[in-house]
Length: 339
Image 1 (cartoon, rainbow, N blue to C red):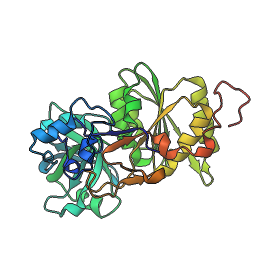
Image 2 (cartoon, rainbow, N blue to C red):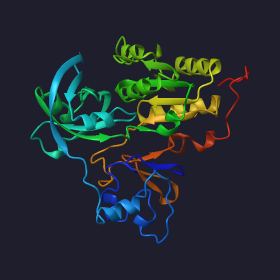
Image 3 (cartoon, one colour):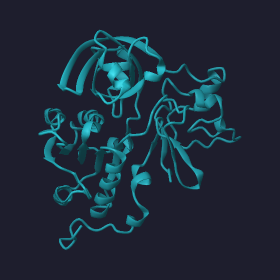
Image 4 (tube, rainbow, N blue to C red):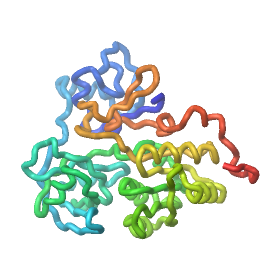
């Protein structure tokens, strides 16, 4: 497990990070205590050399910045949009797939910090837009903010399998959306729609309509509403729609935006229909520090392997594809297939 690994911060202004100081760099073998150079993935710069040039210390980590709230709009009684004025340097980097920030009410303790996906970032104006669903204490505290809010960023690991999305050019993508997790997919749609065709299957949930439908339509995606799940798991409607879409189009990538159980069902079902489709997923890991230090986001694999999912990229198939299904791939052109 976790054969495909990248560090989202490698080669950035935040690299090398605090992990390098303690012999736990994700990429550099020498900063892991080995005597030879054997980088897992070349990021364009030598992390070890950067570490030496920085007096054998990690770069300064991201800090909270007090920012002004420009507007606040309620979509539903439990969902609202914030437009926040942030430094332009931050907005520029946040205009990317998988972008998120930590938000907290000014003067609140750091334990109130919560990661929130960025739906839109205007690098010229220095303005970001975030959508927040009020669920618990942290989001309730953010809901109380009206004039100012504390923002820490930029972070870019809100979507796993980003390489597969970025590699598609003049291709076709299938986005499968359920719940507010679709917010993370919205930025990906905006970045990819210029050169690709994107179909969105979106679960309306417990309401008449998922509030994200209009946003994906405005971006230029072809949106179709359905109910993915029933009491047994993936619904007959969901299976039929997915199969019909895959039969009629040659998709390069499928992006799953839901909880981890949803990821597992979607990936295993689609892989049975077309084993050539690559997968990306929204990152549902518990993220507290975003720097790979606290360990709350750690995922464990076979042979005691582990991954810091707040910083590291991995292939979602390595995590969600069941071994029993690996040999059950069938041809999407087979009209006799009953899957």
